Structures are given as C-alpha cells and as structure tokens.
Length: 167
Image (cartoon, rainbow, N blue to C red):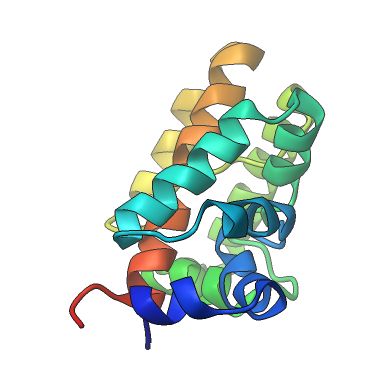
C-alpha cells in the first residue's frame, strides 16, 4: 500500500501509472493532478482530481463517463471494476438477471449516450437494478451530473483502498 509521502515523492510517470487508474482508464486527470503536489491527505488528492474534472470541458467529462463499463457486463474490465461489481454480487447474476441488466443498460445508453454509473459499494444487485430503473426517467443533464458524482465516489473509494493515510 502506498503512503501520501510516497505519492508526493513519485516522478510524474510513476504517479500516473500508480494513480491514473482510479478515474477508470482516464490518466489525463492524474497527469494534471501531479502538478498540484504535495497532497496532505487522500482527500486532498481526491479533491484536486475532482476539481480537474469539474474544470474540464464537457467532451472530456463525457469521455470519462464513457470509460466506465456497463454494470453487470461480462466483458474484460479493469480489476478494480471487477472487484467492485463482484462485491455487489453482479458476478453472480442468473441468466434472467443478466438479460434484464443488459436490456436496461442498453435502454439507458440509448437514452443518455453513456453507461449507467453507480458507486456500487454498499449496494447489491437488487438496489442497483432499482436505481437503474429509477434514473432512466431523469433528464440528460441530471444523469450527466449524477454520473460524475458517482464517479467521484468511486474514485475516492479506490484512492482510499490504494493509499494508507497513516504513516
């Protein structure tokens, strides 16, 4: 496990390699964040990264959202996504549940142009499916902002798992 001291002392390439994955295959965020060192805490690092996303152009935010896999998908994805979905039971969907998730995921993508995003920690397949059904009726603007807020939660969980706050 890394420490904040380790993070602050890393050269840029190593920092991007070790931290760039927390925002789902979007290393440009960590490339910019590196210039904001030193970080006092995981939350300080996370806040800088979130501010980078918030200040970025909408097309980059959309690319970040689209970098996330469909929930319940059976595709190759980043190990952190696999573990997060496994923790919510999405790796144990029955064939019928899988079909329902795929159908709703497709409806969601067709409606909004990006995948349904939810920080699944603390959720199970039933609460995730219910959230998908509920959010399908939201506006494009609401879902875009909700997706970013969920990405911020996911990235914080990932940073907390990767960096030890106690030195």
